[in-house]
Amino acid sequence: MAFNVGQVSDFSDSNSVLSPVMAALAKSITLPRFKGALYQAMGNPLVPIKTKQYDVYSRSKSTRNGIIGTAGGSDWGSTSATTSLPIAAAYNAGLTVGHVLKIDSEIMVVKSVNRSANTVDVFARGAAGTTAATHATGASFSVIGFAGRDVDLKSAESFSENTLKCPNYVQTVFELLDWTKGAELERQGLSTANVIAILQQEATIRVAETLSNMAINGVKQAGSASIPYMSSGLLASLEDTNGSTRPVQRYNASSAALDETKLCAALDQVFALGAPDTIVTGLYNANKFKTFTGAGKDVTIATDRMDTGAGRFIDHYDYNGARLNLLIDADMPNDKVAIVTMGSLKKGWLDGDILTTKEEPTLSTREKRESIQGSVGFIVENVGYDHLEIYGLI
Image (cartoon, rainbow, N blue to C red; front, side, top):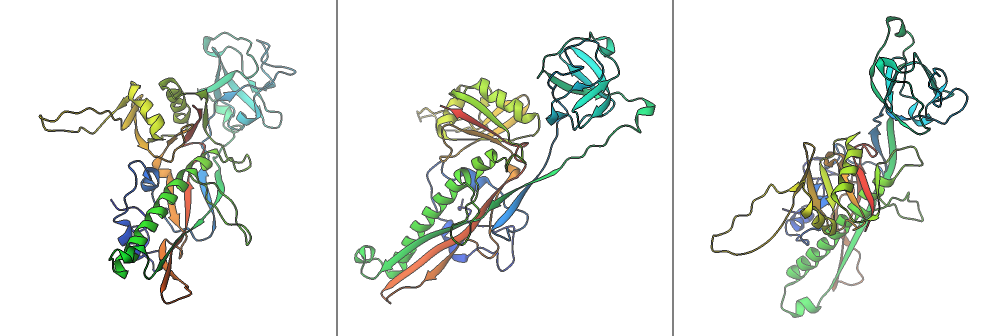
């Protein structure tokens, strides 16, 4: 399969179509076995990137579950208190009259919510036959249903999700090639055309390797006249809170090796809000999957009965009815694994600045100077919901 150097199928305007020279070069790019897997799997954006700075959008996916707040005044330390019961501020916004709360083994129904004080009143303690109990600060609560009275509809409050946006930037890539008459390749008997073709092919492979690495390890920087723009790749995007305005999902492996217990805990965390379909890992951690009970393979390699050989491979992980593909990429660091939704990962070229070849000025008619250049950006949508980064692995 040709290396995907640009958006061929999505955009057909004169500024976005792929350079014929690049299309021809891409057909013969051969990278190492696990190089560029994520870059190749990324989709294209629905519309071209129009500016060097662009926004990546996500819709919030709020959970009504959370933790209770700090004690003070009438609090969770009393089994009879029904008013001014503190809820941690981050989890108070989604509650309204009628929500059925479960804390530890006790159930109660919300009567009213005080947004400014971050407290709730409940109708009674120990509802539905449960026993009223004290609850420690920081204890978890879950909303297990809704129980409203006819007269409560006028008091119920609406709640809507928000559109979150985070800026990213395109990153301009140059790869230069120089050819001088009488150089080594020509002395070996190659024609000028063949020499240039070889140099173009080698330069294109270097570009492909650069793009593959950027897709995972790229970091963002707002450029200016004095500094270049840089685009955030997968890992930096999964860690980017955009100044605490965007949630991220991360699982700390606490300086330990990847094992199935950690993987399942991370999957439990991300499945609470999203539906990922792919695990992105380097070969180092991919080898650990061979011992996991949920790991398997869809492909069967058939050989002649006279053949002898041995081998092991894993291409997916099954967990509680969900199957996640295993994507091995050589550029993934050993201390991290990403659990992602591939449909939310995209790459795109700046409109009018796709990857192409350009003749560059030379000092002599006996020289040829050419560049492969373009401006690319990476888009990771729904950060904080559809994806999770496992970090701190050894």
